[in-house]
Amino acid sequence: MILRIAPDPATAWSKLAELSPEVAGHYWREFSYFGLGSDFPRALDAARSLLGAGRPAAALDLILLYDREGDSAEAAEIVVTGLEDLIAARLSDPEIGRLSSRFQDLFALLARDHEQVGRQRILSLEWHLLPALGFDAKAPILHKTLVEDPEAFADLVTWSFHPSTTSEDDTADAVEQENRRNIANHAYRALHTLRTCPGLTADGTLDPVALRTWVMTTRAELAARDRARVGDVQIGQVLAFAPRDQDDLQIPEAVRDLLEEINSSDLERGLSIGIYNKRGVTSRGLLDGGAQESELARAFREQAERARAWPRTRKLFKGLAESYESDARREDQEAERRHQGLE
Image 1 (tube, rainbow, N blue to C red):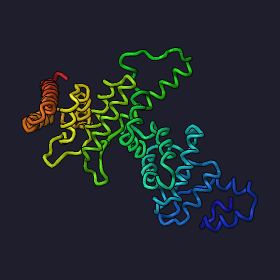
Image 2: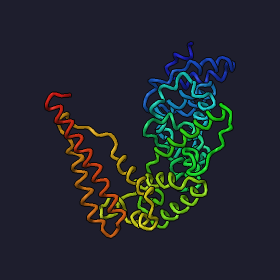
Image 3: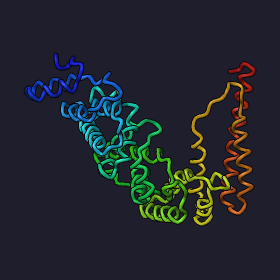
Image 4: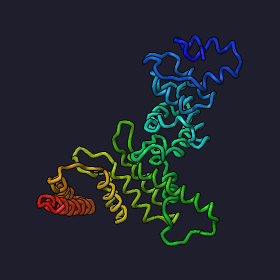
């Protein structure tokens, strides 16, 4: 008790070395790391001791609070160990609540030090903790792997969707079936939190050759797994995140060329879905109606005219314009009903 209320924690820690391991263990199990000051110099030492006392969530929270060097390999190793301990305990740590919105900060730290920690180790952590990352999950190493490795992307599609023409073995027992459902849900979430495009260079520009190589290899892999059609839809949704060219069309030239070459309505449908979903949640006044959607429809019709050299892209833009025109009519009708007091 006396050591826990000491004004200088570092002094108390030097005394702990002179006492029994039982005393040290009790100290760290009860240690409060709040209010130590923004310049607290021994955050990493404290985090290690909290890990040793079976408090991984507290160790990770302490790193986020006090480690101003945050991108050191030493801090990254502590973070990896803490996350592994949480997973081993099935996220049952009573102090995990303080981390609920900070897992992505921890993974951002690990992404900066992935070479020292080990990419595979971080990849495993991101996969296991994906549900804890929230709706708009950011798993840098997992997502980077998916847009660099066609087989990894094909694995997730294979786990998420049934084959197109063949039936799968359904002889597994109830436990195995539940495991498959869990993996399928996990894989689907990983696919639908992917917000980057294959073929991106370090400066964020698009390499058409790398993009085409990834798309063609991934399509071949998915076709071999009897998931060609659903695979094209998923690839299309990823292509929606390709950066714009200087001509500022929503779909860059490298992707337009691929649409013409591949000639797949499923790929185009996936791309259209991806573009539509990128808009996210919108807000408006109760009586605003569909002004936002009307403007989007106008913009896509204008882009359709500029994309005449790419007929399939032009058709896709027109389809998006029609979809937003339909949305605008619906919003206008709802606004009119509110204006008349009918809702």
